[in-house]
Amino acid sequence: MGRFFREPASGFSHLVGAILSVVALISLLHVGISNRDVWQIVSFSIFGTSLILLYSASTIYHLVNSTEKVVDILQKIDHSMIFVLIAGTYTPICLTLLRGSLGFWLLSLVWSCAVFGILFKMFFFNIPRVLYTGIYLLMGWIAVFIVVPLYNAGGARSILWLLAGGLFYTAGGVIYAIQKPNIFPSWLGFHELFHVFVILGSTAHYVMILRFC
Image 1 (cartoon, rainbow, N blue to C red):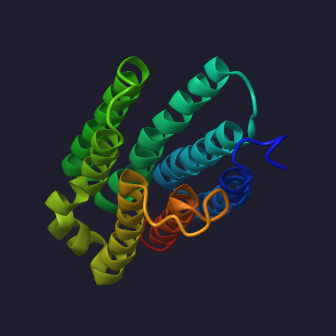
Image 2 (cartoon, rainbow, N blue to C red; image 1 turned 120 degrees about the vertical axis):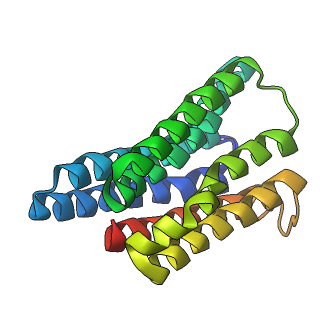
């Protein structure tokens, strides 16, 4: 299979993620439309679309077996979509859970960071793996600075789901950065484990958004 696909295990695992993302978007839109809440419809659409973009870009990048130039371009897109997903995940939290000036301020901050991050990846792509993984994690953990307003708005369970997602993403990021453990290279190496933790992280955040936003 490796003759046809570059990294089949990573690619097909995120193909499953892309399909589940479509289901997630539909379910969230159903909630927003049923509630006739414009903020929910808009923010859920952004979150669901960011999930689809991330998993689709990752699937294409890991499956397409092409020239080095094409693969490099696909890798840039793949890594850039991580910034989109982080900002997309914050969007329902800011617009439906927090709202008000704090929500809009945080939304502006995370999307500004996302745009900066994408440009940074495009023009300074050959930076150490540990550095750009750290940038993702720092952006993702901005929420620790607003944990009290989040608790007041959504309660303890919302924080627990948000924390669970963050910990899954962080564990995956650490595995990706240090490139360990490499249990079965090509099929269940550090990269494949990273993908599993990404799916777990986005699932936890989907549940949080569905139940509390």
